[in-house]
Structures are given as structure tokens and as C-alpha cells.
Image (tube, rainbow, N blue to C red; front, side, top):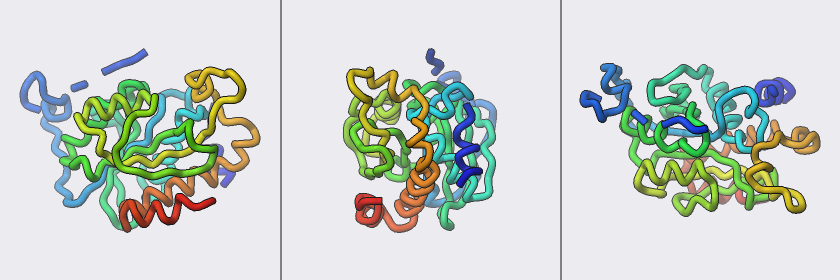
Length: 226
């Protein structure tokens, strides 16, 4: 647990990219994805760089790190402006990804990875922070609005469909009159950090359950009290 916390707690806006000038850069380069049926694309959301690493907004990155570690894989750079780890999650082939764009441009890398790995919308799963859910609580669903989350808004626009799966990891509402945007860009409190490792691992468990047993079973398990 301490090792996990050390890993996930160390411490604008870029854009999109085939054979044509308008095609993704990874296709123009001739890079080809390995053929794999029933592959999933699991995306953890966050902002790149050490100054953001411990932020509430980066809980998606933390869960992605845990999933890659469970699969015994390390992240590598992908031309879709993302870090990817090709792994098996409980035997299910998956690409675990962390966009290198900032949060509000997450959609470009997600759409490019979906095309490159030929993953249909129904097998795209996004892990993100959720203000409207208490800290440590998980909520899983398919589709829906962005609810003020710029990462989700960008992904829904780039995929032209909001019907992907979401694992929403609660970070709670900001205290008093603190601005929500400022709150999610702050590190977890010392009290929250005591339980953060457990929250991250539980969210990773929820992702595994969605991939192996489906959304409904995962909801039945993880919508109960932790």
C-alpha cells in the first residue's frame, strides 16, 4: 500500500493527428496495431507532468497505473499523444492509456487510439474524477453528459458519441466557496491520502469486473458501500 502511494503521489492546451495528411500520425508512420479480437481501450484521465501527479483530477491516471502494474506492463509512448500499456486484465486483452494532452483535450488521443486499435465505442472505458460523488465512492455507468467535466466533454465530441463506459471515482465537493476547478487541481488532503491507495485499488477492481463480467454485475458490487 505504501509503495502504491509513493508511486501515485510524487509531487494550455495541445491537439490531433493514416496514409493521408488528415489521417492520424500513427497511421502515416506505417505503425500497425497487433490484431486482437475483443480488445478494450481503458483510459485513465489526468493532466501530464509531475506538478499535477497528486491532484484529485489525476485519479484516472492513478488507477491506470495500478491496472498496468497488475498486468506486469510498463507504459510506452504512442504517437496518438498518449502513454499506453498493452496488457491482459484478468485474461481480457486491453490497452490501458493515459493521454499526454491536457485534460480538456483528452478526446483527440482517445479517438486516435480507438481507431488505431480498432476498438468500438462499446469497449471504450474511461476512468475519471467525479465531484458529485463522495470521496472514495465509485459509480459506474454507460453514456450520459459531461457534467462539467472537460475531459469527458472532449472525449464525447471527438468520438461523436457519449455512449462509452465510465468509472467515476468520487473526490467530493470543494469546501465552502472554493472554486471547483481549483479544488480538482489541488492534491488530496492528508486525511484522504490515508485511504487513497485502497480507493485506487478498488477502482481497478471495478474496471476488471466490467471487462470480465459486464457493467451490471460491476454496478451491483461497487455501488454498495465500500
